[in-house]
Amino acid sequence: MDAVAHRESRPLALSESRTDDRFDVVVIGASLAGCTAARLFALEGFKVALVEHHDNPSAFKQLCTHFIQASATPVLRRLGLDRLIEASGGLRNGVDIWTRYGWTGDIAPLDTDGNPAFGYNVQRRTLDPLLRNLAANTRGVTLFSGCCVRALVQKPGLAYSIELGGRRMGQLCASLIVGADGRSSPLASLAGIKVRSAENSRFGALQAYRNVGLRRGTCSQMWFRGPEVGYVFPNDDGVTVIAYIATKDRLEGFRDAPGAALEHSMATFPDAPDLASAQPIGNALLVKDYPNLWRPAATHNIAFVGDALMSLDPLWGVGCGFAFQTAEWLVDILAPALRDGASTEAALRHYGKWVARQLAGHRFFILDFARRRGFNALEKLVFSAAAKDIEASRHLHAFGARLIGPANFLSPPFLLRAAWVNLRRPSALTAQPEAAV
Ligand SMILES: Cc1cc2nc3c(=O)[nH]c(=O)nc-3n(C[C@H](O)[C@H](O)[C@H](O)COP(=O)(O)OP(=O)(O)OC[C@H]3O[C@@H](n4cnc5c(N)ncnc54)[C@H](O)[C@@H]3O)c2cc1C
Image 1 (cartoon, rainbow, N blue to C red):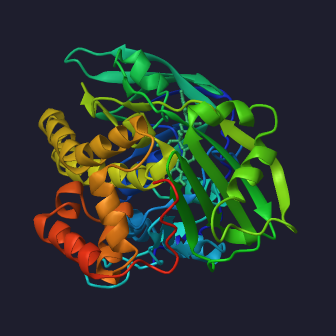
Image 2: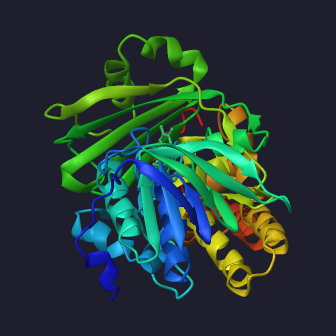
């Protein structure tokens, strides 16, 4: 067991002073991706500076529905975070999905050992401070909270170093700078990296509650009905997040009272959660526009992870999982070069290729769906089969949990099975053939 995780936290805020120091790695942003990169690099024996512009140790990301895909569970284990999440009341998750073909059931996909795979539902209010504390208390990590990047200083040989601003001033030099500073990545702007974007035709509303009456058990639930998508996410501390996403032609009805509109819309789904005794926590949040954004994985001695690398439509709940995973990939690919004192150039190129291989297919499908109002023929085939057949459902959930990529998901044997199931099996009892799809 890693004793570091259980040491008393040292204060996260440092006194105002000037620092000029040399690190192996400087990580900008102490949220999911940044803390993961910082802790894993430090566990590999590197000296890491972790720079976070929030000064408050309890800061957390507000805009999230807290569903972490099963694809990230191996890295959560490697971090020692899985047991901390469970000790804090985080829930192992699965998801039951309704379409007009009926419920798919909460059928767990299998991990590489053939065991049922799961991710976690844990509020960011709980998760973010837990992970930041874990990273800050890892031997080798120095947290600069209340600090940001004022400028990038270019050194001879093209490598950048960081000019700190905020609570501490000074220069941080390192062989590698990691941009984990979220979707608007100020670091990428300073480095002159252009963001690429693609439209998202949907808006979203979300609200947290206590005392939600769940009609499909404690797994997460999701509804697809034409241009509408609904969600129920049970979390730690008895908090359930309800979310609704729809095409922007419905946005007008949400502008004045998003909470009321959210409840009204959710109530129309079959087996909708019972909100009669539910107490809202805070105000409903309305996300009017959330375009898909992505950047090159690396430039000079800078690499991007998490949302700074790719921030896609939240409809599919992949951002947290990919934040953890991209940080782990970066550490595994860069650590040997950093250890040998070799140039990071080739390793960063390798990281860029690896990220493209792992994520480009997922991004293609997510961008495509973000432009459409409902399912295409392939999606109809797959969801219809999943409502009738456990193996088809397991396969669909493996893709949803990002345990398999699009090529495996749409493999000819699976599509043949889906077609066979659709021809031979009767409709599910929960099907509503007249509903939109
Ligand atoms: C409505 C909504 C719902 C979502 N729901 C889900 C979900 O259910 N599941 C899921 O997987 N994903 C979800 N996401 C996406 C998910 O929240 C993000 O993908 C995830 O938080 C990315 O983590 P990150 O560490 O890369 O970036 P962030 O969490 O955005 O963290 C960036 C960090 O960088 C810091 N920072 C920024 N600029 C600077 C600077 N100049 N200097 C120093 N520090 C800086 C910030 O303070 C912050 O700590 C949702 C997104 C939205 C909008």
